[in-house]
Length: 358
Image (cartoon, rainbow, N blue to C red):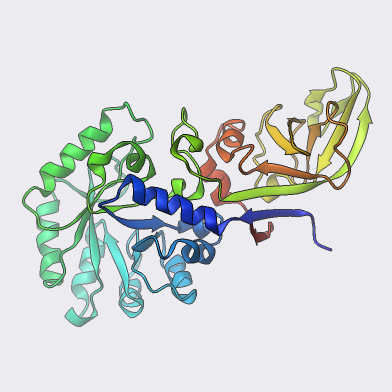
């Protein structure tokens, strides 16, 4: 018998969300972001589910790219951080990876390769995010060098938005203007839009969009739900109730005695904690769905267990299934209850929790 804590992953919902990307940006190619093991869903599971909808896959590092090839994914794979060594440039050629070049040393590594050993490349432009990318004044020279390296391939020109999840903020428009001014005289397709921009900034869709979080059924906006965009939750994190007990009024529950029973209470203990990816800082009242009802988390989250006040729901018993996030409660709601974001919860879910097809 295994521990009764699993994450169900729904391939049909992943495909549905990818199709929603297509509906929002019908004229663009889709470069699906599957980094961090497919946002915790399993990179091969995600790639297989959406392969017929998207044109390519984006990852953070070469290990993730190799995992896609090992899963027999034959579509373009983009390394968003580019190569981290000269060796990785050669590896990219061998496995037909595309490199997103964002700094001088990466361009030099490409120039050092024999002409026949140079991989396809994108050119990243820093329009205000200030993490990676050639500054706008560096772009003309960097672009010319890249075209000299790859005379028969026109690079995709890309940038990344810093505040697209704040739809009313002017900075996204400022970044778009800076990008357009910088590339006005340069040949090549464009890529700007992340999930937030796909949903709210059609002017940014261009030739390639790069959806991430929306593929996994999350909303990138604090004030809007995934349901608002007809996105479906692709993971259901669930565990069993492994104990119930009566607690007298005035008694405390869990480490530090953070929660005190205001009345005679019935407490359910569930076999999942921060060691399984449930956020340690989740507040009292964060909802857990058990036997069809939303019930409040009480007490401090521990490594392997959480406790829930089930006083008002007599149907809860040892062996009942608890849904920690999924369709209800949604992952964004749970994340807000822990002062974090759903991206972190998905990416940080450990391998200790087995993924099962839903």
